[in-house]
Amino acid sequence: MDPIQDEFRLTTLEQLELLSGDTRIRILQASTKPATVAEIAEHLGVPKTRLYYHVNQLAEAGLLVHVDTRKSGARLEKVYRAAARKFGPSEELLDDIDDPVQAAKATIRAVIDPSIPALEAALARQFDGEELAMDIGRSMGRLTQAQVRDVQAKLAEVVDIFRQRDTDFDTEGDTYVFTFAFNPASEGVPE
Image 1: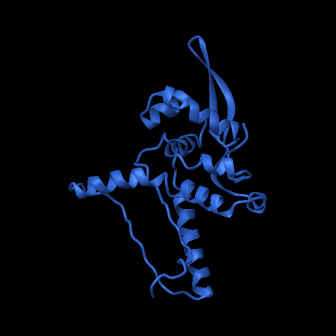
Image 2 (image 1 turned 120 degrees about the vertical axis):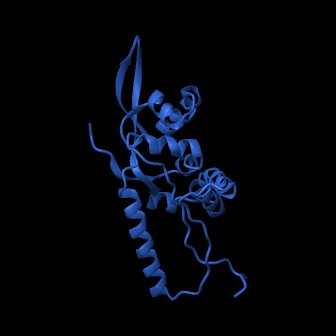
Image 3 (image 1 turned 60 degrees about the vertical axis):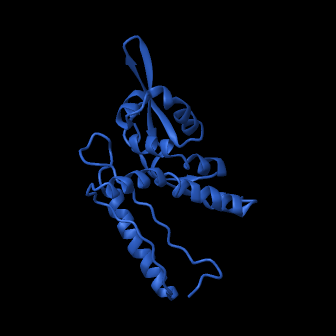
């Protein structure tokens, strides 16, 4: 079996939009090593019948790859693996975008939306008195282009450290999400 790719370049807006669902993101995270739908469902703590629709969508889009078939009793089960450890837009996707607003919204949904339910739940637990290892915040500041490049390099280092951690569902520990946006402020933002 071929090793998992480090990065998968999205070539269609539909692929990008598939990454907007928390369930689909969790399926991809749980399948960095080959797994059946039953194994993924057990890891996620959901009924496997709830996952088939999402698994089929991801597989049809090429984001999840059918890598093997296992016999389970009298049935055959497909074994899937994520197409890559990380996903990002390809140059051709960016070049072929007819509606930049739709593409921007799809990107935001793919990056931010899946984090919202987990963040809301964690904050509720924290407000209820549970001590959790988490950070949330927002900052604004004026930066020169050199400073922007420096911040981007440091963010890339942090992301690389995070990605290098073992996130397979066979390992011990809690699952953490690292979501960020580093962007120019909108026009008209007060100084």
